Amino acid sequence: MSLRAKLPAAATFMLISYGSITVYPRRPLLFVPEPPLADVQTPRVFDAAEELELREQQYDRALAALQPLVNEAATRPEALLRIARIEP
Image (cartoon, rainbow, N blue to C red; front, side, top):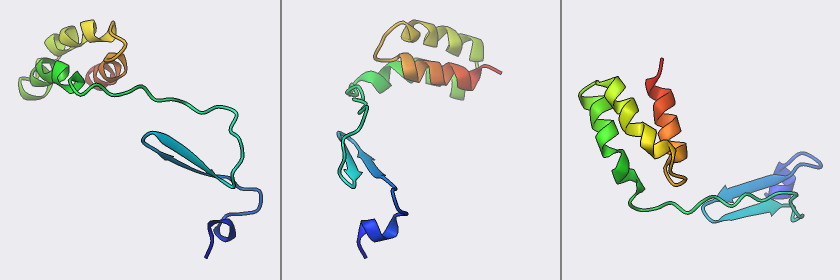
């Protein structure tokens, strides 16, 4: 069975994968986001905060360790997510 037969009339199917977006039926999109390239070394910068938060349960110190990472564009999203997870 074709993809068109599975979709309701006038529906659009978007397949989003790493590095590409495919649209069925083919039509131009108004906006196509370009995700930032992930830095292979980025996860290592969170090791100290993770140790403080998860193993030592020193949440105030973990928050302090994450604050400088909020100022860096490459680590800001992950740092903010971790801060939101820690704060009540």
